[in-house]
Length: 164
Image (cartoon, rainbow, N blue to C red):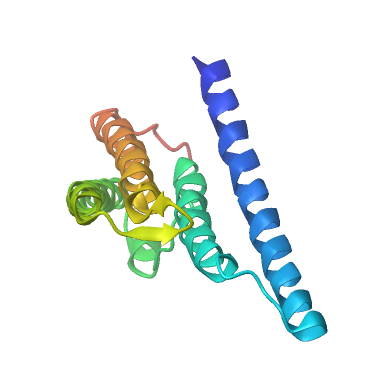
């Protein structure tokens, strides 16, 4: 199982790097065409915008696998170990619920976009470009649900005694 997870992490990392390189390369090429040749590719700017969306959400997926989300950690410094576990559990539960709602509503959004039949660029339907939204939030939801379960188990596990 850990080998499969390791392979999935490498795929995520490779996808993230590839998207970043493609986005940078396309943007630089577009700048060179505009400034050097008074030309450009009509589809490049919409594609770069889509790549920014994909990059941001896949980056969030990668950050979520190690629980590296943005957090404000002022209060937990002053809590005892038991209360710190409880607040961490509540944060994971809240994050899971919010991400699950985002997954649900972004999936509904993509379905509505599919029904509209609009195109992003070339003949690529816009809903295909937006599929990353429910996918990424779905993965993040699963990861934080697992963090929640892991911490729930920890709460019911006795803390080790400190020796003076």
